[in-house]
Figure 1 (tube, rainbow, N blue to C red):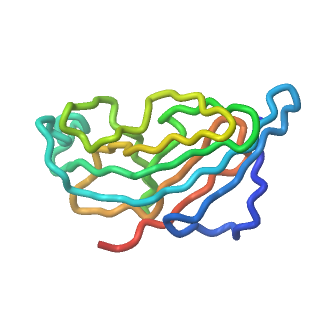
Figure 2 (figure 1 turned 90 degrees about the vertical axis):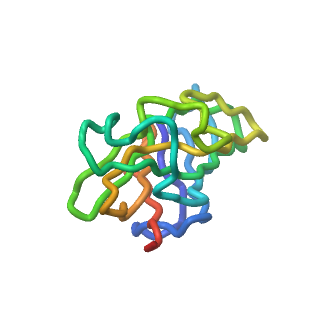
Amino acid sequence: MATSVSSASRGALAFGHIWKFTSSDSAKAFEASVTVLGYRQGFNSVGNAGEEAGEPGYVWAYTDLRLCVTKGSFTDDTTSWTLYYSDGSRVQRSGTTYGDFPKPEFPFEVTVTVGKCVRGKLVFAVPGGKRPQSVVYAPKGVAEPKEWAVPNG
């Protein structure tokens, strides 16, 4: 189990702001931090975002993420990340990957050990006419997810 130890406000964080969290399970003690470094919507790929989403008008987007561990080790996967829209809808990460997706890609599943970080881009198929309000991180065991506000345009 993990709980937040960040002193940040309950509102969405700005890109680049680091959120620290720690384990509440003494048998699996760890301290980690995570941040969203950027968001880009509308890149081209050999794969079609509309086909993946099952809806026309979808485009590819990605978030640039970094996760670091300062004590113990922490295992995470890409299902911890979603995009939140102002109408309440959420978009999960892409279920596919193509060779021309932005690199480096964030690993599907990763164990990060003390003193190490992982950084990469996580791709989503998103509605082309809308922009997400925030990037949401909700790893297993965290009581309340953390969000980073997506800037306009």
